[in-house]
Image (cartoon, rainbow, N blue to C red; front, side, top):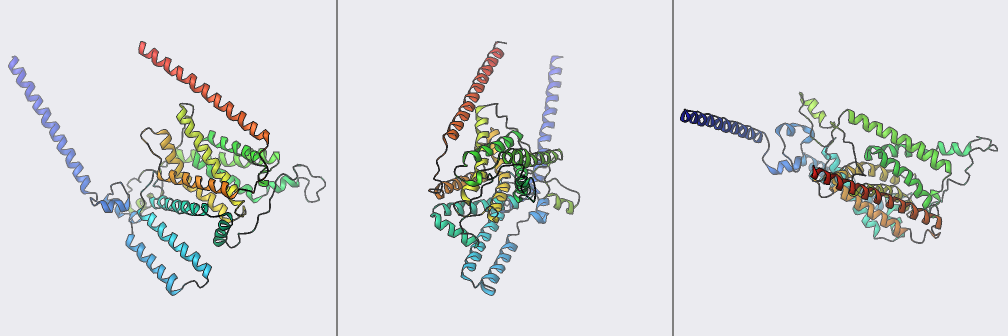
Length: 448
């Protein structure tokens, strides 16, 4: 009986082994079919989505074909037309056209051949183009940094002939009265002028964009309130930072900032509910028209959860991003004042809008670097943004020499010293207690 049982077991084992081998063969056949449906030419794969496999179905989508030959033919025709058939006669205008043509050529190349970042929706070309624009912007700022203040002003005047004129210093705190009974137009003239200022709309829109980029209520309110303290800190340097108390508190923090933050976070909540995904490829659709359109529509929206009190590392990365975001705003003042760029100039608005778009990708990459243990380096867009920010800050320091003779008041220095000391001590106590609690918890777990 024992021999028969042994034989039966051996036969059953052989049957199981044969089934397992058959399953493996079938799995390998499926993999071979998938590989056959993909382009094996690495050049084609790189041209479409660098670093990934491209299926035949994706290649059939017109929007995702590289069109490299078509694009270079179009560029050649445009170059012939604007350089030979219809050239610009004015010397300075010809320089501007030539510079723009060189930048456009580079941006087209970047759009076609740069590698994809963490975001590829609504379209990979869009984020590659932004990366190329970031490279151009970094190079331009480095170029400006190595010029003198007067030469830098000339470069900006070359870009925009309306520039090159000294800016009048404007203070928003000349009359902080809310009630003005003597004024014939309005008894609340000061509030009315501040409320109906065009910058109110830009201010609210800016904070709406920041909410879409940052997606964290705590960080948004910290940078909102912190910027008001920075304005108070640098009032002795720029008249533009001087505002009335009700302007700081009512119009800024609990006015424009509040509206922009609430609207932006509400939009993030709606996008998250609709489950948009900016980082994955679109799913297959039934018709070619729907499939083509789906490539431009994201499927989910990632929210950020920093958990800053979980570890000192998380907190430091969070504080680092707060500093970066504050520098983006404050540098706008340090650059436009010494280089005579008025606040209503398109270059100022263009810079802020550009920072908003590149910030979407940069903050996403930065968040992954700070929170994902498998990510060991920052992304290309984050690197470019930090590089631009450093160069802009150096410009503000270099070009501002001699323009701010008033020293920083002692009360400001003492206030910052006390505030930073309290925060440092508080965080140190918190993480020390947390460390000992975790240590005791591990000790108790081992004893059990």
